[in-house]
Length: 147
Image (cartoon, rainbow, N blue to C red):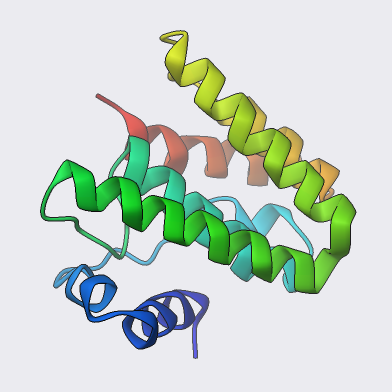
């Protein structure tokens, strides 16, 4: 099962509301998971999908309205953090909590270009991506959050 299938099947099993929000035309494209150790990929992509539900174009979910999007994003953030905790412990959760706070603050300040925060988080999670991998991730990220 792919990490995106795991994300959507877990959501479907959790609630019929989340199941109904699974996209009929998913675009399961990894963005930042290629930058981290494999055991953290599922957690990071779950958190990133949450971020996209709140701020961009989600890959595997589509919310009916803004209230549902807030709740779905928060659900995904929580599940992503649980997955990261299981794989990387408290230091990994701290890195992602800092990421989530940093992205929210940058968005609130009107600075939507927060790709560097994601790359910093990937490195804090033990990733050692090369310049090409970072460039690919940032290009995919920009395409998903562009206005």
